Image 1 (cartoon, protein in one colour):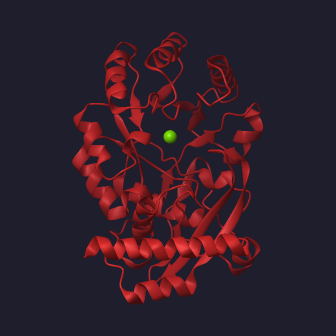
Image 2 (image 1 turned 120 degrees about the vertical axis):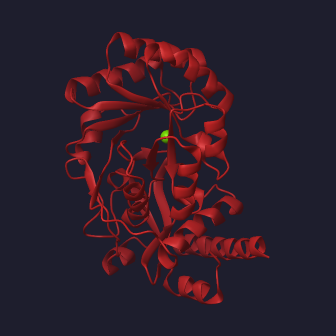
Length: 330
Ligand SMILES: [Mg+2]
């Protein structure tokens, strides 16, 4: 949607930059920075990771603007299922406790500095503590095809209830090759890092490189675009978040409700932040989160306010992304 001067003005008038400590290190981060603003629909979150280029950040901005100002299809769905997430840590119990009860857990694997045996140990620990949970393994593209096959064989032999391997290998070509080889183990793969840009989901579907797509609203430029892309790709979708506050997650939950996927969403990540902007955060109860708009409370906005230099950095980035949005239109 077009960024009019009125929209710009309202965003600048309501923008709050926040800095929120993480519970455990995730994606190499110990603090998460986000910018929130308010439009006629309610509050939206703009939180592209700080290392992202302005081009990418401006797509995230489009998504946030659509959520606060745009036309969004309505839904009657009240809650959606979400998965728990286990970072690559030793203390499995402590890391999973904040999620309460869950049916599906995503285990981070193939982390730098860890071995395949570390990953298997973590999987076994989860199996012992949560024998009924279905498992997803997220390698963030860090395995070689041979390693992924080795793990797949173990999973098959040990009868581990695996939903899918998430981005086991890096490239679309490797994903396609692995997908063929995994057929004998009856193991599915989901594309995550391979579907970051708007053009990616179709490329993945056409290359037959995944059984499932992990989609995030922000990098796809908003709910309407994500709906369109999911339909075009014709594959089952898992809606996921990018480490957002409950404001950002509410946008993903709305997309998940509209898509009505059989797969639990990766939207229980508010539990990874030590604090949230609301007293009713979207953390899961019995493996579900509500589908609702979130209004941050004033105390949280004050308490979590980012240092001045970081606020300046974000406001400058916002200005640059406004200009990119305007360029794209002309
Ligand atoms: Mg992933």
